[in-house]
Length: 239
Ligand code: PXP
Image (cartoon, rainbow, N blue to C red; front, side, top):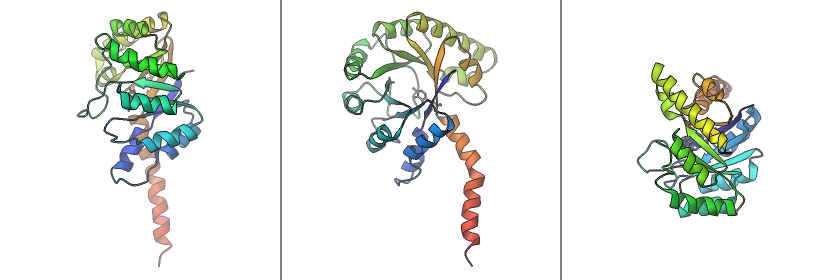
């Protein structure tokens, strides 16, 4: 059975729009667990645009399934990961201007920095995963660093249509095959939604998918009617 990691960053994004206390990603994580999440993913970005350090601290105390802390390869967040000890640390590239993580890590070209981060994390008993494009050289470079998993970037697959999408799926399948041959766990994520997830879940040896945007979007929609009805009831009790 494919494991489902639910990324709750967007819940914190809505909260930060008002710099207030709701919606709380900690409560969202508990509800995601009730819905069947096998893991909770949260990205502590350098610019703290959504998840805050306090969220990380509280999530580490309250999440009962696996925790997957997404971080860049910087001393600051690697030190935080080493202190809070999530089940997994997922290393990603990060730039301030991006709306979301844009591409995979360049493991081939940036081995030294990534190796330093991995050694520190492994030293604390944290499982390590690298977010990479579905590229055989990046898969090999990841294996050379001794990581436990790679997460293949499914963003281009999600954006492509028709024959181009089939081609992107083939790249994912080829990189997935090499990943498991090299003894690493196969994860994937980015841009997956209710319509496009099945072929990715069916990739041989796929173990875990990490999904955020589409689940949070669906949660807003399926919750809208009840949320309005609740406010309606309060107003109906006045006067
Ligand atoms: N994996 C990684 C490395 C990500 O950065 C993200 C987005 O935060 C996801 C998976 C989930 O992507 P989406 O929100 O598009 O489902």
